[in-house]
Length: 116
Image (cartoon, rainbow, N blue to C red; front, side, top):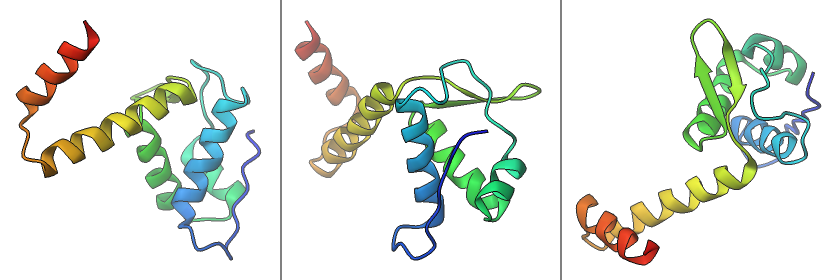
């Protein structure tokens, strides 16, 4: 099982700590792409937190592209920490563009122009 540590004295939320520790485990190769993670209830028991806290952390990592949820197969590592970092930066770019008044199509055109 992954070695994940939670510090209840930290100001950072428990789900954010769990997500950060899982990101670290993926980055350091403790959890490799394609590998299944333990069930959320098992992770919750090891961490000493509520199952919903773990599920919140796992959904965060899924949204970053690091984890994949598959019915019947559980939760698997989908990507590397580098992919997760790219997804996080892309989210920031989308949020920034929206605040500046850009629509989705305009942002896509800008990115496509830069990629050429």
